[in-house]
Amino acid sequence: MESIIYELRANNIKEEDIQSIMEKVKNRISEENIDIELQKLGYPKLFTVDYDDYDLYDYDGYDDEQY
Image 1 (tube, rainbow, N blue to C red):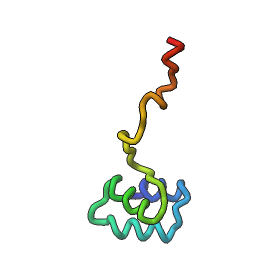
Image 2: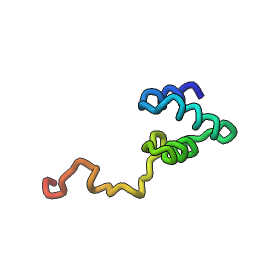
Image 3: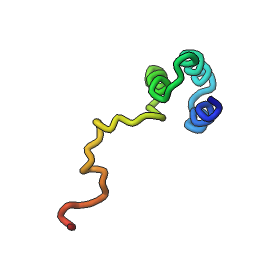
C-alpha cells in the first residue's frame, strides 16, 4: 500500500484526496478501484490502461509507407 500512496503523491494527487481514496478502497484495493475513485475526483487514471481506446496504428511508431 505504501507504493500506491507514493505513486499518488508523485502524480500530484492532493493529500486529502489520497486519504479519501484509500479509505474508500481499503477493503477492495486494486489498481482498477483506485483509478475509478481518481476519476470520480476528476483525476486521470494512473494504474490501468484502456487498450480498446487506443488505435494501435497511431502509436506503433512506424509509417507503413516507409516499409
